[in-house]
Image 1 (cartoon, one colour):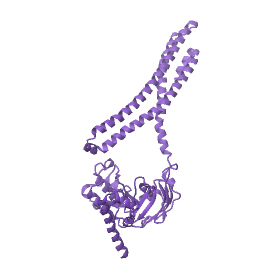
Image 2: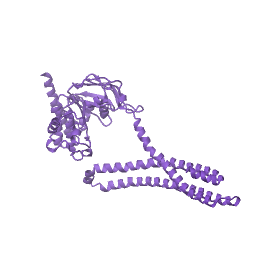
Image 3: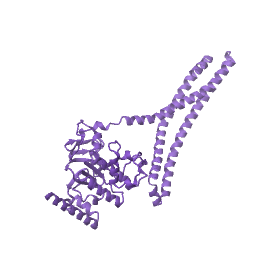
Image 4: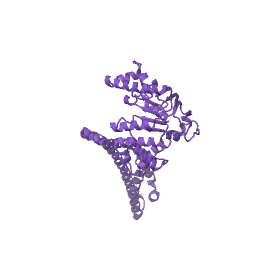
Amino acid sequence: MSGILIMIVIANYYMLVPIVIIGFLFFKVRGWYLATARDVKHLEGMTKSSVFSHLNSTFNGITTIRASKAEQVLMREFDLHQDTHTSAWFLTISTRVAFGLWLDLLSVTFITIVIFSFILLTYYSYVSGSFVGLAISQSLILSGMLQYGMRQTAEVVNQLTSVERVMQYSRLDNEHANARAIETVKQSWPSRGLVEFRDLSLRYAESDPPVLRNLNFDITPGSKIGIVGRTGAGKSSLISALFRLAPIEGGIFIDGVNTQSIPLGQLRKCISIIPQEPVLFSATLRYNLDPFQEFDDRKLWDVLEQVELKESVRDLDIIVSEGGSNFSLGQRQLLCLARATLRNNKILVLDEATANVDPRTDSLIQHTIRKRFRNCTVLTIAHRLNTIMDSDGVLVMNAGRMVEFNHPHVLLQEEDGYFSKMVAETGPAMALQLKQIAEEFYSVNVIKSEV
């Protein structure tokens, strides 16, 4: 390209001025295009994400949609998302076409100047016709090269927005940076399951108000504790603090060891959790049960038998589909229970693990937890009060604070208490049943303590 420009200038040095002006205009138009294209491409990406998100949600809930006969509603929603994305895509194409149009106009203007400059030059001096023809033909080639170069440089800048997003992810703070110091603990830690909360506060961002405020309480080893509270009370945030998912103020001590001072991987490895929505990986069943390959096949088959899945599984190397779609919801929850049973940690967290399963699976999970984790500390985030009335204690949360903490039967003796009001809201019949369960297990605990 530089050689063509030099040849044109040698043939007609007056072309130096138009070349500089046209070159400046080329880069000016490129700058205008880039200023618009970045925002347009970002808009197109956002609208595309909404389309894919809607499709993914539709596929995941296809049976519910069919049962509810909501196909037309979902089709209208899809059309709305698709129309929005099409509008953004049309805008993207329009900006490219407009950019190309202005480049074409500048190229035609340059070629016109080259042709007329040689026509005028022939009136005042002799110029070889072959040289003129070569200059004009090369100018046509130069026009295409300039357009291609401008388009490609603009496209490179547009694509760099993706690189910019990747770089932003690479600059995220490492979770390990939250640890103040690294303390060596025994391989058998924790051996008891004592959990102590000391002046615990948590906020997800420095500018946000705290979602947990000055929590101080102890959970004795082997106790079964229910955590209740209305939406936004801080139940899930308490578990986030336990797993160090966010920076905390104060401290959480497990068997006397500050969780902030031990390696993050070891902390999370020593606490089991069974979430409300079971999490399975798109890999073999063996990997889902034992991702770190710490147990032999005999133990894997043993835990599958304990959760009554041994007959449903032919081989440990079968592939679990994405999200565990080749297993029923109850089976997926039982696989999560098998994973927790295999590790047999001293601390188990249940995020209302039986909320979405059938009664038989619910009974099996409750029985397995009572049998396999009877000497473990179990924390249950409860959305249904009947799941925690047989607990050793109930922690009532409100606005990030602990407002009550005692045995459910003891809490029910306070008619104006938070827990009593929550039980009363379930209705007279259910409230009576819940009180009877709490009283029955309280009597059993009293007898055990006396013995």
